[in-house]
Image (cartoon, rainbow, N blue to C red; front, side, top):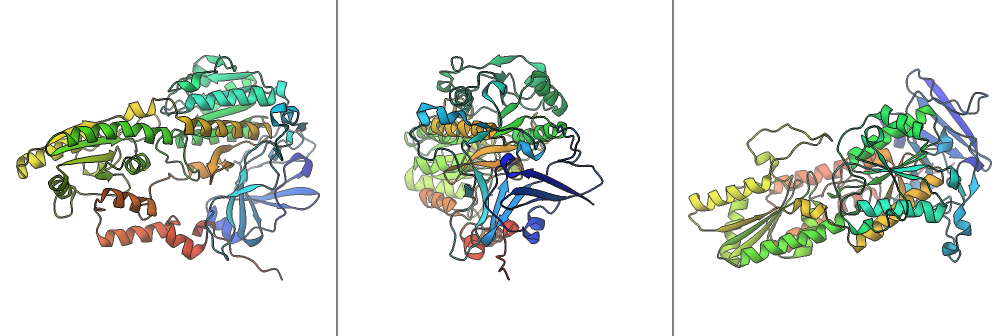
Length: 559
C-alpha cells in the first residue's frame, strides 16, 4: 500500500470549516470498495492524505517536476468530517492536481447588476445538508458544498473556451439550460467563446460545432427539444478528451441523465489523468425524475403539467359513455414519479400503476376486480400507468437494449388495453368502451413551463459559477431548495424511485381510493427492505435521525 500525500496552501484551495479527523467506520461503510480521501485543516494549510490500493504511482504534488500531473489512479472521494457527525462530501477542484494555479478577482464584483446584493459571494464554509428533518440528538449528517459565485476565480474571462453538449432523450428545459449557460458566461464573466457540440457525445469527434452567442440562443427557451441535437451512446472517452484538448476547450458543460453523468465522470478522470486545466460540469436531466439526491430534475414539473391534458381527455372520453374506461400511459421506465404526481394533480384518476408497486390482474383483490367495482359505482374509470409498470406480466421475453444500455420496454399500455377488453368481453360479459392514450412524446417535446424555466436558470448559473471557481467533476443540483455541487458518484450510484411505504404514495392511494394490490405480508417486507437500505422516511428518521445507516457517524466525545 502506497501512501499518497498532497499539500497546498489555503490560498489555492477554498478551505472548508475547521474539522476533526474522520470516523474510520463511516468511511469504510460509505466507501467499502475504494479508498477515501480524508481532508483535515488547520489555520495555515490544507493537507490531504489517502491510502491508494495497488502499486500505481498516483499523484505527486509539490515535487520539482512539471505541474502537469499524470495520475495513474482514479480520484478518490473527498470526505470532510467535523463535530457532531458533520460530513461534507466535497467535489474535486483543479488545484487537487494543479496546485500552483493563480487566482483572479471575480468579475462580478464590478457588475452593476449585483452591486446592491448583500453578501452575493458564497462563504467558503457554506454547505447544504442532505436531510433537514432531524431530532435534537441527531448527528448533523451528510452535507454538500453550496453553489454560487466565489470571490476568487481560476479562469480569466478571455482565457475561457467553453463547450456545451446535450445527450440522451429529450426533456423540457434543455434549450433553457443551454441559453442560460451562454448568458451566464457572457454577461456575468465576459466569456465570448462558447461552442455547442452537435449530436451528443459523438459530436465531439464526428460532427460540426456551433458557435453560441447570446444572439444565437436568445429565444431558444421558447422551443422544445435541443438546438444542439442529441443522441444515445457514442461515448469514446479518448476521442472526446482528444477533441477537448485539440480545440483548447477548458470548460465542459454536459447535460444529460444518469448514464450521461457516468460518462462525464469518466471524461473528468481522463482529463485529470492528463493534468489538463479543464473543468467538467454536469447538469442532471431526466424527465422521469429518477436521479438521486436532488429535489427534482428540470422538466419534471412541465411533464406533470402536460400530462394533465392526456388525463383530462381520457376522463372526458370515459364519462361520456356507459362503462367507459380511459387508459393513459405516461413515462417512467423504472420510477413512477410522473404517473404519481400527475395522478395527484388531476384528482380524476381512479387507479395509478407504477413500476415500484407490483400488481396482479385476476383473482380476489386484483386489478380486474377493482375495475369492475369502480364501473359499478361510477359508471366510468380512468387508469394511469407508467411505461415500466407490470413488465413482469408480459409473457414475451425481451432482452433488447437501446444505445444507452437501457432495456427496451414492451408497450404495457397496449397490452393492458387488450387484456382488459378480453377479460370483460369473454369472462364477465360486460360491455365496456376503452380509450387508450399515449402522450409520451408530446410530454417531453414541449417547451418548459415557467417553474422549470426559473429552475433551469438557477442550475445553469450555478454550474458556471462552480467552473469559474475551479471546481470540477461535479453535478449542479437542487437540494432542499438550495443550489449545491454534488460529486458525480452520488448522482450515479443508484436511481431515485418512489418509496411505496412513504407518505406520498399513501396520499395517492387515499386520492384514488384504489387498493395497494399488496398483501399485508408484502407491505411489511417492503418496509423492512426500505429501512435496511436507509430509504424509509418516518421509520428511518425515528431510528437514526437524519443519517442513513451507511453514512451514520457516532458522535465522539473528546477526552
